[in-house]
Length: 636
Image (cartoon, rainbow, N blue to C red; front, side):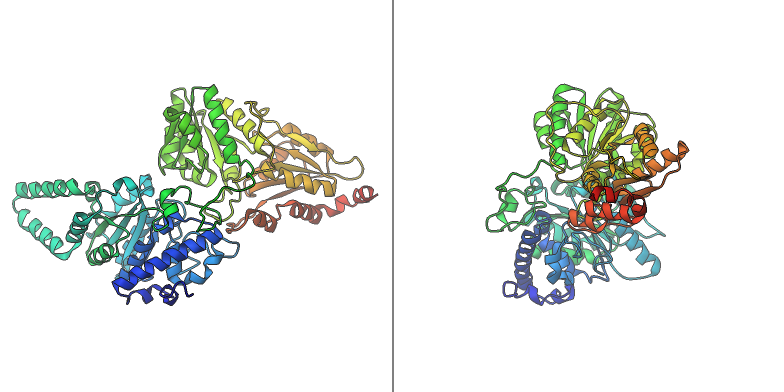
């Protein structure tokens, strides 16, 4: 590793604790270069990781990890952490099938003390770790590193409120590091703030402060006056009053790229008891000019040449489901002034950039606050508007109580556009939309549509919007079969599937009931088996008329879905057959009862037996005897 002479000697954080400040700065440069080289080769999160290089080095330099616990909120900024904790040589496998995860995982390393990927969990986890140490009588530190975006979630504030409270007469010893990469906060960063931060985190300031409290408590009016003066004095130069009210000692903001500021401040805070809060300001994409200029573009790129940056592909990519949704949203908004769009901090990911430009007064980004997003939509719906909540399937899980209590019980007309339904690929189990069919179809008043392709997705969204009750439309990440979406706003026939292929009349017959985009591999498998195929479209209401028609004319049914088998669309079919008193063999194919690893989506589906060959083999294994009568006729 000639390009990384110092980094190549770091096998664990202990190796960097003996380095001088000058060597640590050299290490930061090499580490940043390694992150850029790695992500440009594999794809992954870039801007956020370039911004946390110095902070990662400082934390591992100051704290005795893994005995001291570091919990990285969200975790998409932990590539420097992974490189410094023994996984440097495994970076080429990042987010690849069988390789290391793009997020912290307890099973992957002892330095990954808590698995993260959804936001705003770190402070709660660290509080639990700190109190566990207190209860067990162990001397170790617990540190949460949370981004400014994650601080918008209610869970973070719930944890802050709890963390500053005494337990058994003692406020737990923990540190919350706010990694603030909002460039609008950069002006306060400088020599004065660095001086104040070091002063307020130092022993003299703390001793003087506590000593003054002891003296002034004997004169309550003076104590209250001093307390208010301190709050207002700090509030004039730092935005820390709110965190002080939670019971934290607030320090900062300081430059998160300045090791000369970070290390002594962290050392001071490490030795202070109670709840500490350090506010650091970093820049997304720091050290790579292209990412600094456009951190959103370089947030999660596919592989690219670092010397050239991200280039537009020569061949235009297929239209994605996300883009279909974005165009539909604009078209429907132009037609119906009641439409309002809501996103929990996923404007780009959910395809709402154009909608915000064209309809700024009807666009709402509520921050990383899925619970609030759902109830906010309910409030809008109560007043006659038609909210469309664009949310990833995996993130709607976080607003499940609100979905039931605030939307479904009141039967409000909210449309949920569920992006990333099914397998998501490199982000892995934490981001997979594996459970929405099961957790939605059991809710009264709530309907669920699973379109098979891009055009059906547009039609499904229109059908959902026309209803006067909650409806979710689930669609996968990326492109589908390539069915061009029509420009009109035609709706799918409500609650109706369609027969896409009918088996030959000779011999025994199998019918495949496909829900969603797996219709197309099901059709390919059916060609080999001479099976019938129904595009069911609706999970709820289920097209029982079509189901019973197929049950009456076939010897066995097969359900196919890109969601968990337990409680999924196949279960809905079994329940409907049972209710109708129909006894028929049914094979349910879908995601197994396990968390699916990260990797290429096509490879994962093939491994799970949900590609055309896998569907064919599963049917032959279960119903081969029933097909033997038919197969000679096909071959003849």
